[in-house]
Length: 431
Image 1 (cartoon, rainbow, N blue to C red):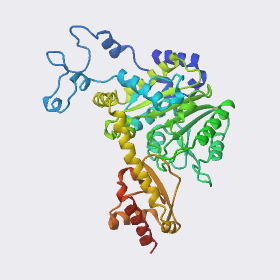
Image 2 (image 1 turned 180 degrees about the vertical axis):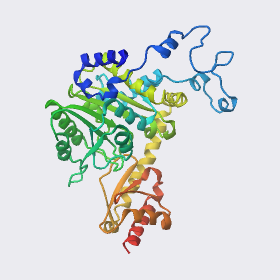
Image 3 (image 1 turned 90 degrees about the horizontal axis):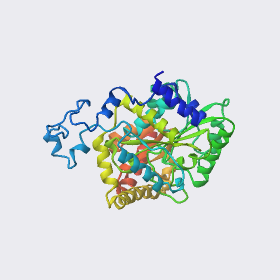
Image 4 (image 1 turned 60 degrees about the vertical axis):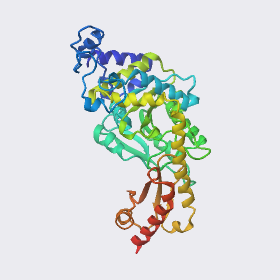
């Protein structure tokens, strides 16, 4: 093993031995190189003549660029064309950390790591898999989960997703099923994937349900389990009903036990409607977490990023910093939230139509981009999907006879028309 990896491992072991046990074999072996080309390049920073970095400059030492591109971007070329650090730009890392505290007031007084920038959330989940998931290990997730976890975790790292029933018979989070799944098998390493608002169901837990989830994880940790608690917060902030937790579960997991490493994967992709920018963040927290521990985890994560994509887009990070610092940012974001809330409300209103129950019923939903309906017996989801496209010009996602509807992409005025179309297509398929 590389001496730089061993050095980071020694720091992790001395600061929190449980977290060292959570690392995958890849996670133990990875490091961010401080020597070699990167180290020599860092040493040469500020020299009059710098022939170290693999990028070109103009004769005035500004980044070399094509005017056909530069003319379209109203930013200083130094914020656009050079490589960004593998850790992410220092300014956006610090800004996002400050924003985490603003968006999650309960974090106040809790020290978390400096976020590491990823190429959005898919890449963030992949890097967490790289760091913590070994072949054959189980990742615990709800029965309704984002299908891309299969590619990210199962096919890439050889894990297996073990599910628990998401909803109980009362239409809430099934805490009993979660606890039972968490306590299966012997004492050891457990990997949990929490995704709220949930994709595909659009469900976020109530305040009481969050407390129950956290208590279950804490009880499991007290038994000696080492728990990697991953929070996929892709749709954070989009909660539309009272009584639903508006802060990330990460907030409460951050300090519950030395055996629980809370990991937050998030970013502006959905929160700020910049799907193509491909910028995300990984943040760590654990009870008693120290700057030395967090620095070591950040270095390992940045090493994984460097070995995978080198770094995320400098231009995207620059544009986001400009947006976050804009005095109208909060106002503009609130305006977009209201549009999303109106679409959610339109779904609620449309589903009051009692005739739909002959063909489908809604699963619990209160947040995010999506909601799901469960088809009645005798209606084939794939036949319905095709009929909706061919006859009604409506697109939906069929998930084994559960239909995912992205109301985020449908104007409020078209919501009722959409459900009427689904209802009519259901009757077509039944016939």
